[in-house]
Length: 377
Image 1 (cartoon, rainbow, N blue to C red):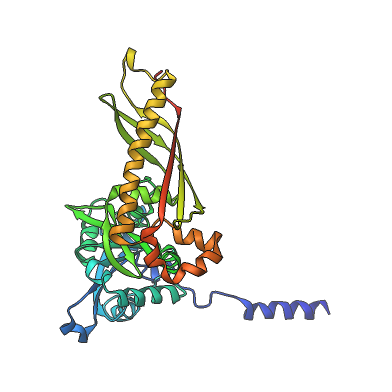
Image 2: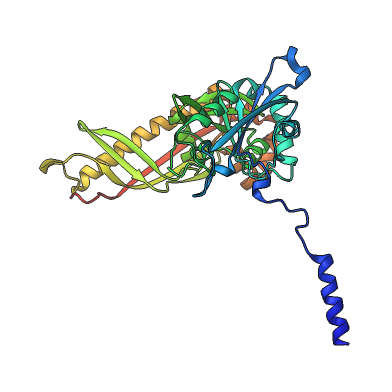
């Protein structure tokens, strides 16, 4: 009986072994950047996009590399990114697989076409292979041009890719607002607005130092690095924050690792009023060295604190005015807050929110605390 059971068990393993269709990494092409350039309508018969891919050269990786080119670039005409993947197989030696896709690049011309952007987002969101935290980026020229600079750059990284490493923002830059497929769709569903990093080329460098504003899936304008920083502060998206101001002729720099902002709805007979309370606790990075200019006196610290708060408050007011008056784009999460914490009110105003947002009274309360003064006393 034991022998029969053993034979049955061994035989069953034949039918339970997995990975029968597994392909090794060197048997696939794994692009990590794709760009979609919209072609002229009269040339649509070959496809409305020029789809460009960059992907690593497996033979150039590792200590036993047999080739020098770290990455490859290919482009093809197609009506969608997915059709481009299928069409490009006749010129590549291996199948293309989008599992490790890191960056999708939208040129300005495409980003201004609401219907096409919605179509692309829908396709990315439906696909079961594409990672839902794939990064979005806007370029004012063409995606192909950006990717060609990327391929030629001496700073190109072998594995993750130059653009992805920049957008991943491990360096803590506050000059642009990161955007992924998940965050973009979520913000569109509640606030109907989202921001996407803007990249540009400078010789062999790729630089991200501003953000593009999307309203209802359409590019409507741009914001600079100062506005991007303020929005990230108000939405708790910033990792490291630095602020500089002048105090009695000397430059004062303060660094804080994790600023925190809390939102609160204040009842008002005059209309909706939102209060954003920003807490900044940090250390002095730079001031001035000298006997009469030390930071040991509490009054001096208090004066510096007020100067920093005043400068930041002025900058915040400018950003909020731009969002409400110029763009009518809720990038600071007011709608999301009302939806989550005041659902009854949100149901009443949701349909008219576009008309209501510009008139919301938004107050910013900033509290700066200087806890550490560095090694010099």
